View 1 (cartoon, helix red, strand yellow):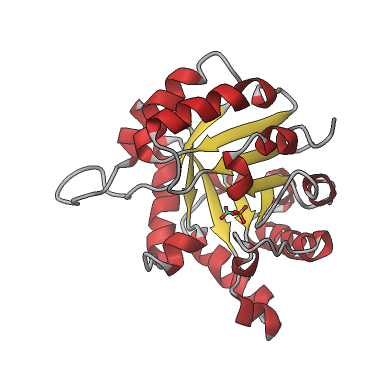
View 2: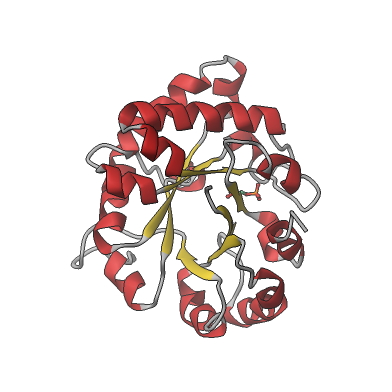
Length: 249
Ligand code: PGA
């Protein structure tokens, strides 16, 4: 049985004061044991959120890092810097990083390898833009992203990676993929992992869906056999996130 994951991606939202207020509201509904809950917060909120969730089951995540250890990389944050702040998860390859900040498959692969080296769980995003969905080449598109991201990742590491399928046309648009559309790609991705590794890895790896998940559609999506939870943007900034975490109650 794969444990469900519900991860909030706060993106570039929440000053320290706002983050403290939000965590105070979400702490109790999110302190559950049947679902793995993660708050992926901006760098500037990591310290305060880490202090505020102490003693709960909530995991702390970052949204990015650079794969080098240290040096002349102005504006960047290393994986070791995150580890020292008790960060346990990191989002890699989010479409906003790929599209706006021009991160390519090679950089994403390097970050994926580095996250495992330091023992941070990668939440590795993949997902196609609208034109690829419309011309129906999305399986090829996802396969290329996944094969590249897992290059040089061994089986033990692969089993720990969390994949998030996030079709770009569904992010922040209010246009959710139907649960069947989400399941189709998550099932395809799971089979692909089986081909790249083996049946055990395929059965253990967690694959999430992301893109306009809300309290009223979470249950239908999370009940699909190949979907192990969600990566939540907009709705993670509200009390609604507690309802998504408790989708099965
Ligand atoms: P959304 O974002 O829930 O606001 O669509 C999801 C994401 O980008 O991770």
